[in-house]
Length: 317
Ligand code: GUN
Image (cartoon, protein in one colour):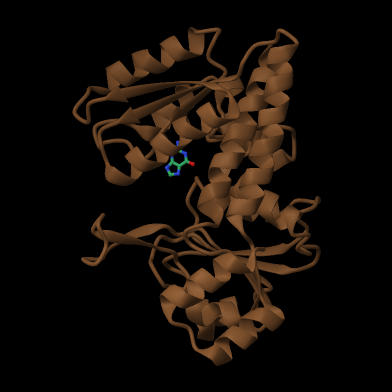
Protein backbone atom coordinates (compact mmCIF):
# COMPACT_ATOMS: atom_id res chain seq x y z
CA UNK A 1 0.00 0.00 0.00
CA UNK A 2 1.05 3.58 -0.30
CA UNK A 3 2.55 4.72 2.95
CA UNK A 4 1.02 8.12 2.15
CA UNK A 5 -2.37 6.88 3.18
CA UNK A 6 -1.07 5.51 6.45
CA UNK A 7 0.83 8.68 7.21
CA UNK A 8 -2.35 10.68 6.67
CA UNK A 9 -4.22 8.40 9.08
CA UNK A 10 -1.43 8.66 11.61
CA UNK A 11 -1.35 12.44 11.32
CA UNK A 12 -5.12 12.79 11.61
CA UNK A 13 -5.42 10.38 14.51
CA UNK A 14 -2.30 11.72 16.29
CA UNK A 15 -0.74 8.29 16.72
CA UNK A 16 2.36 8.02 18.91
CA UNK A 17 5.80 7.58 17.32
CA UNK A 18 6.18 4.23 19.07
CA UNK A 19 3.03 3.08 17.34
CA UNK A 20 4.33 4.31 14.00
CA UNK A 21 7.41 2.08 14.30
CA UNK A 22 5.11 -0.77 15.05
CA UNK A 23 2.96 0.04 12.04
CA UNK A 24 5.82 0.13 9.61
CA UNK A 25 7.52 -3.05 10.71
CA UNK A 26 4.59 -5.43 10.84
CA UNK A 27 1.31 -4.27 9.54
CA UNK A 28 0.04 -3.91 5.99
CA UNK A 29 -3.01 -1.90 5.05
CA UNK A 30 -5.41 -3.68 2.72
CA UNK A 31 -5.92 -0.60 0.60
CA UNK A 32 -9.35 -0.44 -1.02
CA UNK A 33 -8.31 2.48 -3.19
CA UNK A 34 -5.57 0.53 -4.91
CA UNK A 35 -7.47 -2.75 -5.29
CA UNK A 36 -10.75 -1.21 -6.39
CA UNK A 37 -8.98 0.97 -8.96
CA UNK A 38 -7.16 -2.06 -10.34
CA UNK A 39 -10.42 -4.01 -10.65
CA UNK A 40 -12.26 -1.07 -12.20
CA UNK A 41 -9.46 -0.42 -14.71
CA UNK A 42 -9.76 -4.01 -15.90
CA UNK A 43 -13.54 -3.71 -16.27
CA UNK A 44 -13.14 -0.38 -18.05
CA UNK A 45 -10.73 -1.92 -20.59
CA UNK A 46 -13.01 -4.92 -21.14
CA UNK A 47 -16.00 -2.60 -21.61
CA UNK A 48 -14.11 -0.55 -24.20
CA UNK A 49 -13.35 -3.80 -26.01
CA UNK A 50 -17.04 -4.77 -25.98
CA UNK A 51 -17.96 -1.43 -27.48
CA UNK A 52 -15.22 -1.51 -30.09
CA UNK A 53 -16.42 -4.91 -31.30
CA UNK A 54 -20.02 -3.71 -31.62
CA UNK A 55 -21.26 -5.56 -28.55
CA UNK A 56 -23.75 -4.25 -26.05
CA UNK A 57 -22.68 -1.73 -23.40
CA UNK A 58 -23.37 -2.93 -19.82
CA UNK A 59 -26.38 -1.17 -18.30
CA UNK A 60 -27.08 -0.98 -14.55
CA UNK A 61 -30.45 0.19 -13.26
CA UNK A 62 -30.38 1.43 -9.66
CA UNK A 63 -33.56 1.98 -7.69
CA UNK A 64 -33.52 4.32 -4.70
CA UNK A 65 -36.63 4.54 -2.54
CA UNK A 66 -36.66 7.56 -0.23
CA UNK A 67 -33.79 9.88 0.55
CA UNK A 68 -31.79 8.34 3.38
CA UNK A 69 -28.45 10.19 3.45
CA UNK A 70 -26.20 7.12 3.40
CA UNK A 71 -28.24 5.36 0.68
CA UNK A 72 -28.16 8.55 -1.44
CA UNK A 73 -24.37 8.62 -1.15
CA UNK A 74 -23.95 4.93 -2.01
CA UNK A 75 -26.26 5.07 -5.02
CA UNK A 76 -24.67 8.30 -6.30
CA UNK A 77 -21.28 6.62 -6.09
CA UNK A 78 -22.54 3.52 -7.93
CA UNK A 79 -23.92 5.70 -10.75
CA UNK A 80 -20.70 7.75 -10.93
CA UNK A 81 -18.60 4.61 -11.14
CA UNK A 82 -20.77 3.31 -13.99
CA UNK A 83 -20.05 6.51 -15.90
CA UNK A 84 -16.31 6.31 -15.23
CA UNK A 85 -16.14 2.72 -16.43
CA UNK A 86 -18.22 3.36 -19.53
CA UNK A 87 -21.44 1.61 -18.49
CA UNK A 88 -24.91 2.99 -19.04
CA UNK A 89 -26.74 3.66 -15.80
CA UNK A 90 -30.33 4.50 -15.01
CA UNK A 91 -31.27 5.87 -11.61
CA UNK A 92 -34.91 5.45 -10.64
CA UNK A 93 -35.89 7.51 -7.61
CA UNK A 94 -39.12 6.74 -5.81
CA UNK A 95 -40.73 8.54 -2.91
CA UNK A 96 -40.33 6.99 0.57
CA UNK A 97 -44.11 6.79 0.93
CA UNK A 98 -44.80 4.74 -2.25
CA UNK A 99 -46.92 1.64 -2.09
CA UNK A 100 -45.17 -1.68 -2.53
CA UNK A 101 -47.11 -2.29 -5.75
CA UNK A 102 -45.35 0.60 -7.48
CA UNK A 103 -41.92 -0.84 -6.70
CA UNK A 104 -43.09 -4.27 -7.86
CA UNK A 105 -44.22 -2.73 -11.14
CA UNK A 106 -40.88 -0.93 -11.50
CA UNK A 107 -38.93 -4.17 -11.02
CA UNK A 108 -41.15 -6.05 -13.47
CA UNK A 109 -40.48 -3.38 -16.10
CA UNK A 110 -36.73 -3.56 -15.51
CA UNK A 111 -36.83 -7.38 -15.70
CA UNK A 112 -38.59 -7.13 -19.07
CA UNK A 113 -36.29 -4.43 -20.44
CA UNK A 114 -33.72 -6.15 -22.66
CA UNK A 115 -31.38 -3.18 -22.49
CA UNK A 116 -31.02 -3.48 -18.68
CA UNK A 117 -28.36 -6.01 -17.64
CA UNK A 118 -28.27 -5.49 -13.88
CA UNK A 119 -30.85 -4.34 -11.33
CA UNK A 120 -29.98 -2.97 -7.92
CA UNK A 121 -32.53 -1.93 -5.31
CA UNK A 122 -30.72 -0.01 -2.59
CA UNK A 123 -31.46 -1.38 0.90
CA UNK A 124 -32.89 -0.76 3.41
CA UNK A 125 -36.38 -0.15 2.04
CA UNK A 126 -39.10 1.76 3.92
CA UNK A 127 -41.11 -0.32 6.40
CA UNK A 128 -44.25 -0.67 4.24
CA UNK A 129 -42.27 -2.59 1.59
CA UNK A 130 -41.18 -6.20 2.00
CA UNK A 131 -37.48 -6.44 1.13
CA UNK A 132 -37.84 -10.18 0.74
CA UNK A 133 -40.64 -9.82 -1.82
CA UNK A 134 -38.69 -7.25 -3.84
CA UNK A 135 -35.43 -9.21 -3.82
CA UNK A 136 -37.26 -12.36 -4.89
CA UNK A 137 -38.78 -10.48 -7.81
CA UNK A 138 -35.51 -9.42 -9.43
CA UNK A 139 -34.67 -11.83 -12.25
CA UNK A 140 -31.69 -13.97 -11.14
CA UNK A 141 -29.89 -13.19 -14.42
CA UNK A 142 -30.00 -9.48 -13.49
CA UNK A 143 -29.36 -9.96 -9.76
CA UNK A 144 -26.03 -8.11 -9.61
CA UNK A 145 -26.37 -7.72 -5.83
CA UNK A 146 -26.41 -11.51 -5.46
CA UNK A 147 -29.28 -11.35 -2.95
CA UNK A 148 -31.86 -13.50 -4.80
CA UNK A 149 -32.40 -16.97 -3.26
CA UNK A 150 -31.26 -18.56 -6.55
CA UNK A 151 -27.96 -16.64 -6.38
CA UNK A 152 -27.54 -17.44 -2.68
CA UNK A 153 -28.30 -21.13 -3.27
CA UNK A 154 -25.73 -21.33 -6.06
CA UNK A 155 -23.17 -19.54 -3.89
CA UNK A 156 -23.74 -22.04 -1.06
CA UNK A 157 -23.26 -24.92 -3.51
CA UNK A 158 -20.12 -23.35 -4.97
CA UNK A 159 -21.72 -22.90 -8.40
CA UNK A 160 -20.95 -19.92 -10.64
CA UNK A 161 -23.24 -17.01 -9.76
CA UNK A 162 -23.31 -13.34 -8.79
CA UNK A 163 -21.66 -13.03 -5.38
CA UNK A 164 -22.97 -10.31 -3.04
CA UNK A 165 -20.86 -7.23 -3.66
CA UNK A 166 -19.33 -6.62 -0.21
CA UNK A 167 -18.24 -10.23 0.44
CA UNK A 168 -17.02 -10.49 -3.15
CA UNK A 169 -15.02 -7.29 -2.67
CA UNK A 170 -13.44 -8.71 0.49
CA UNK A 171 -12.36 -11.83 -1.44
CA UNK A 172 -10.83 -9.60 -4.13
CA UNK A 173 -8.80 -7.77 -1.48
CA UNK A 174 -7.56 -10.97 0.16
CA UNK A 175 -6.55 -12.29 -3.25
CA UNK A 176 -4.80 -9.08 -4.33
CA UNK A 177 -2.64 -9.05 -1.20
CA UNK A 178 -2.25 -12.85 -1.30
CA UNK A 179 -3.45 -13.22 2.27
CA UNK A 180 -3.23 -16.88 3.30
CA UNK A 181 -6.62 -18.28 4.28
CA UNK A 182 -6.20 -22.07 4.06
CA UNK A 183 -6.66 -23.73 7.45
CA UNK A 184 -7.10 -20.39 9.22
CA UNK A 185 -9.74 -19.70 11.82
CA UNK A 186 -12.00 -16.89 10.57
CA UNK A 187 -14.41 -15.24 12.96
CA UNK A 188 -17.25 -13.28 11.37
CA UNK A 189 -19.09 -10.87 13.67
CA UNK A 190 -22.55 -10.30 12.21
CA UNK A 191 -24.95 -12.56 10.34
CA UNK A 192 -26.73 -10.23 7.92
CA UNK A 193 -27.79 -11.53 4.50
CA UNK A 194 -25.75 -8.73 2.90
CA UNK A 195 -22.37 -9.40 4.52
CA UNK A 196 -22.00 -11.67 7.56
CA UNK A 197 -23.73 -14.81 6.35
CA UNK A 198 -22.38 -14.79 2.77
CA UNK A 199 -18.78 -14.02 3.76
CA UNK A 200 -18.92 -16.85 6.31
CA UNK A 201 -19.91 -19.24 3.50
CA UNK A 202 -17.34 -17.91 1.06
CA UNK A 203 -14.44 -18.08 3.53
CA UNK A 204 -15.42 -21.66 4.30
CA UNK A 205 -15.55 -22.92 0.67
CA UNK A 206 -12.91 -25.19 -0.79
CA UNK A 207 -11.18 -22.50 -2.85
CA UNK A 208 -8.87 -19.54 -2.57
CA UNK A 209 -9.69 -17.33 -0.76
CA UNK A 210 -11.44 -19.85 1.45
CA UNK A 211 -10.71 -23.11 3.25
CA UNK A 212 -11.05 -21.38 6.60
CA UNK A 213 -12.71 -22.82 9.66
CA UNK A 214 -15.41 -20.22 10.23
CA UNK A 215 -17.16 -19.15 13.40
CA UNK A 216 -20.13 -16.81 13.01
CA UNK A 217 -20.81 -14.58 16.01
CA UNK A 218 -23.82 -12.36 16.64
CA UNK A 219 -25.65 -10.39 19.32
CA UNK A 220 -26.38 -13.55 21.37
CA UNK A 221 -22.86 -15.00 21.20
CA UNK A 222 -21.32 -15.73 24.59
CA UNK A 223 -17.62 -15.17 25.24
CA UNK A 224 -17.20 -13.13 22.07
CA UNK A 225 -13.84 -11.78 23.22
CA UNK A 226 -12.45 -15.30 23.78
CA UNK A 227 -13.66 -16.41 20.36
CA UNK A 228 -12.14 -13.36 18.67
CA UNK A 229 -8.84 -13.99 20.42
CA UNK A 230 -8.69 -17.37 18.67
CA UNK A 231 -9.19 -15.80 15.24
CA UNK A 232 -6.54 -15.60 12.53
CA UNK A 233 -8.98 -13.54 10.47
CA UNK A 234 -11.75 -11.33 11.87
CA UNK A 235 -14.51 -9.84 9.73
CA UNK A 236 -16.30 -7.16 11.76
CA UNK A 237 -19.71 -6.57 10.18
CA UNK A 238 -22.06 -5.58 12.96
CA UNK A 239 -22.41 -1.82 12.43
CA UNK A 240 -21.20 -0.69 15.87
CA UNK A 241 -18.48 1.96 15.60
CA UNK A 242 -15.22 1.02 17.34
CA UNK A 243 -16.65 -2.27 18.64
CA UNK A 244 -13.58 -4.44 18.01
CA UNK A 245 -10.93 -3.33 20.47
CA UNK A 246 -7.28 -4.36 20.69
CA UNK A 247 -7.87 -6.70 23.66
CA UNK A 248 -10.10 -8.82 21.37
CA UNK A 249 -7.46 -9.33 18.68
CA UNK A 250 -4.48 -11.66 18.73
CA UNK A 251 -1.07 -10.72 17.40
CA UNK A 252 -0.72 -10.91 13.58
CA UNK A 253 -4.45 -11.28 12.98
CA UNK A 254 -6.00 -10.15 9.70
CA UNK A 255 -8.81 -7.66 10.41
CA UNK A 256 -11.47 -6.78 7.85
CA UNK A 257 -13.66 -3.84 8.87
CA UNK A 258 -17.02 -3.77 7.10
CA UNK A 259 -18.60 -1.11 9.35
CA UNK A 260 -19.21 2.36 7.98
CA UNK A 261 -21.32 4.27 10.50
CA UNK A 262 -21.99 7.99 10.45
CA UNK A 263 -20.96 9.35 13.83
CA UNK A 264 -21.97 12.95 14.66
CA UNK A 265 -18.98 15.30 14.47
CA UNK A 266 -19.55 19.04 14.82
CA UNK A 267 -16.07 19.80 13.47
CA UNK A 268 -17.00 18.35 10.06
CA UNK A 269 -18.88 20.30 7.41
CA UNK A 270 -21.11 17.28 6.79
CA UNK A 271 -21.80 17.03 10.55
CA UNK A 272 -20.50 13.45 10.76
CA UNK A 273 -17.42 11.26 10.56
CA UNK A 274 -17.35 7.79 9.04
CA UNK A 275 -16.33 5.17 11.59
CA UNK A 276 -15.70 1.48 11.16
CA UNK A 277 -16.51 -1.34 13.56
CA UNK A 278 -12.83 -1.56 14.50
CA UNK A 279 -10.90 0.68 16.88
CA UNK A 280 -8.33 1.12 14.11
CA UNK A 281 -5.64 3.08 15.95
CA UNK A 282 -5.25 0.53 18.70
CA UNK A 283 -6.03 -2.64 16.75
CA UNK A 284 -3.80 -1.93 13.72
CA UNK A 285 -0.45 -2.32 15.52
CA UNK A 286 -1.33 -5.92 16.40
CA UNK A 287 -2.37 -6.92 12.88
CA UNK A 288 -0.59 -8.47 9.93
CA UNK A 289 -3.23 -6.91 7.63
CA UNK A 290 -6.09 -4.51 8.29
CA UNK A 291 -8.61 -2.57 6.21
CA UNK A 292 -9.10 1.15 6.95
CA UNK A 293 -12.42 3.02 7.09
CA UNK A 294 -12.93 4.88 4.85
CA UNK A 295 -10.77 3.59 1.99
CA UNK A 296 -11.22 -0.13 2.59
CA UNK A 297 -14.11 -2.52 2.06
CA UNK A 298 -16.59 0.21 1.01
CA UNK A 299 -14.67 0.92 -2.20
CA UNK A 300 -14.46 -2.79 -2.92
CA UNK A 301 -18.25 -3.15 -2.76
CA UNK A 302 -18.52 -0.87 -5.78
CA UNK A 303 -15.72 -2.59 -7.69
CA UNK A 304 -17.45 -5.94 -7.12
CA UNK A 305 -20.81 -4.54 -8.23
CA UNK A 306 -19.22 -3.24 -11.44
CA UNK A 307 -17.70 -6.68 -12.05
CA UNK A 308 -21.09 -8.35 -11.56
CA UNK A 309 -22.75 -5.87 -13.93
CA UNK A 310 -20.15 -6.49 -16.62
CA UNK A 311 -20.59 -10.25 -16.24
CA UNK A 312 -24.40 -9.92 -16.30
CA UNK A 313 -24.13 -8.13 -19.64
CA UNK A 314 -21.67 -10.58 -21.17
CA UNK A 315 -23.65 -13.62 -20.00
CA UNK A 316 -26.95 -12.25 -21.24
CA UNK A 317 -25.89 -11.02 -24.67
N1 GUN B 1 -27.36 -1.58 1.41
C1 GUN B 1 -26.19 -1.81 2.06
N2 GUN B 1 -25.35 -2.55 1.30
C2 GUN B 1 -26.00 -2.80 0.14
C3 GUN B 1 -25.64 -3.51 -1.03
O1 GUN B 1 -24.56 -4.09 -1.17
N3 GUN B 1 -26.59 -3.54 -2.01
C4 GUN B 1 -27.81 -2.93 -1.86
N4 GUN B 1 -28.67 -3.04 -2.88
N5 GUN B 1 -28.17 -2.26 -0.78
C5 GUN B 1 -27.26 -2.20 0.22
